[in-house]
Amino acid sequence: MTQVERWLLPDGIEEILPPEAANIEFLRRQVLDLLGTWGYNLVIPPMAEYLESLLTGVGHDVDLLTFKITDQLSGRMMGLSADNTQQVARMDVHSMHQENSARYCYSSPVLHTRPASIHASRSPIQVGAELYGIKSVAADIEIVSLMLEMLQNLGIEDLTLDLGHVAIYHNLTLSMDLPEAIDRQLYQLVRDRSMPDLEQFIALHASDYPDMQLVADLNQYCGSRAALRKAYTAYGHLGQTITGHLDRLNKIADAIETRYPNVTLNFDLAELKDYNYHTGLVFSAFTPRFGHAVAKGGRYDATGTVFGSSRPATGFSSDLKVLAKLVEKTAETPAIFAPFKGEPGLHETVTQLRQEQRRVVQAMMANETPEQLHCNQMLVHQDGHWVVKDI
Image (cartoon, rainbow, N blue to C red; front, side, top):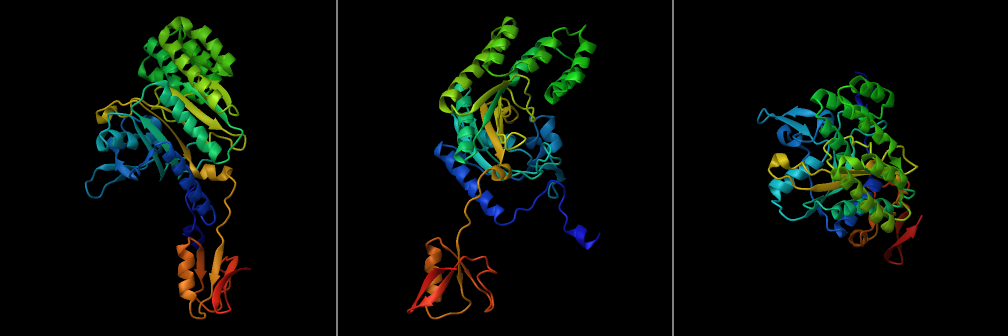
């Protein structure tokens, strides 16, 4: 290995240097403070858990993203956290013992075996909020509103909100009683939006499962409210379950249009999320300045079942690294240069300034300069006192 290779980081793994690290930390505090004003309590999920709790019930996608390691103390397999949702579900049921509604928020680095999307980091800093214990549409409206509030509070404008409902797809496939292998292939084709492959797949199975075309038709119902009205016409005859899902989307859209009139609404009934543990509403926020969703979430009412309680849950998450790319950089905190040695009272003055939350950098050598220590102010001894002067 050459000396250059020793310093190379793995693809998709980044170091964060000043001043970007300060910007991300500022955003983290700003987001968590906002979530706190809505009543969301901070939790810090562990960075590793046994696979039995970390991966049970989360689906194949999260399994593929998870690094597996052997616990040297017990010999059992552990996983490094790739997504906080299942961990919060375990904490809600096992650690918090909640029966009523509960609100949680978090900001934790996670690690992926592969990028979740093109140009995505393999080491996101995941920030999010989750609402447990409420099955009604009011919970979905709150969590979508909170996501939009977070983005707008950070100054991210020109937002488009995509709304979908994965239960519509699942209801259609459940009625066909598909074999597991066919069901899995169909899900993958719809999620990947591979229309030529999907049409070929449906033609292959049309004689055995004629209703499979209804699944492919979901792609037609994307866009404005007009697309949703067409979906009522296309699927209304299949029963109240599917029309109930469409009604829920309508109610959420009504509330969001009232609260956030500047947000563009878009419906996508063929949207199947990357992490296939969702059971109902799914949503994503987009801005023209970024090629992928800047935040996304949905309902996942079954994640806690493996821990003994199938509590209703809905939530969203984002990557602070992505948000930092979209948010105007925060002004760098002014730094005050203090000389290596000086007249009496220098230490007391430096201490007082730091107690006032001002940043003071003291030279460690006599020849260090303010420019070398990135300071734009300095302490000057004047008329028997130390005073701060601009450079």
